[in-house]
Image (cartoon, rainbow, N blue to C red; front, side, top):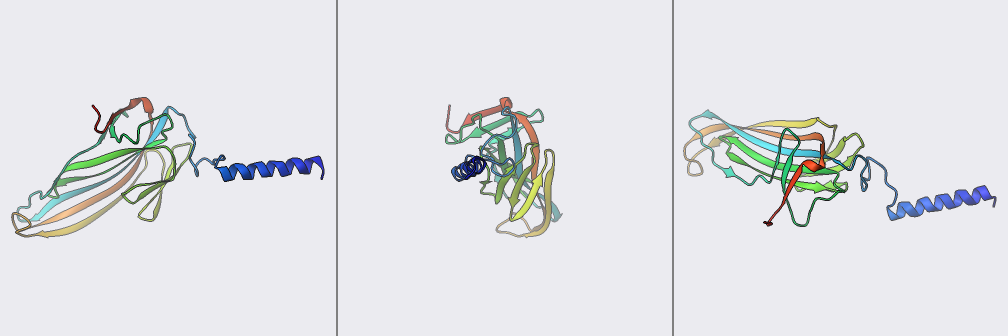
Length: 204
């Protein structure tokens, strides 16, 4: 065998070994390594709002929910409660916020949480799986078996309307309400990790 063939054979063998060991990564597909500035992270938010409007009679909010676990302001400051087993470190590539809110005669309040993400793919309990992220911050994900790709500052929105007839004893009065559900996922873009204010759940 000629030296060129020996070199080529050794190179192919090394590549195969590295692939088998998971040491070779491809940006946008296997994000075990940071592919953009380590000072930045991407914020993805999935939120479902249910708003109720009275159609007939006098409807009242039947449900109140609480415990928002994060707040993200217009200046890019993320204040978040994190689980003791999920501390924030320099390997962070994105934060995933999710939750639900009730307004109008559908109810009152909000319940939210946010989770740090260090590698992809990453499934979540709300039927969302984050698949990959590219160098420009574009995130590909699956939601209810639908493939969605969002660039920074892009959103996916689905709105549905349901007529709800309410009667005692489950409700105070007989009335009819329209429940408007807005299901949205947004890529808020890149933000500075130094603007994350975290509090460990159960900590002092």
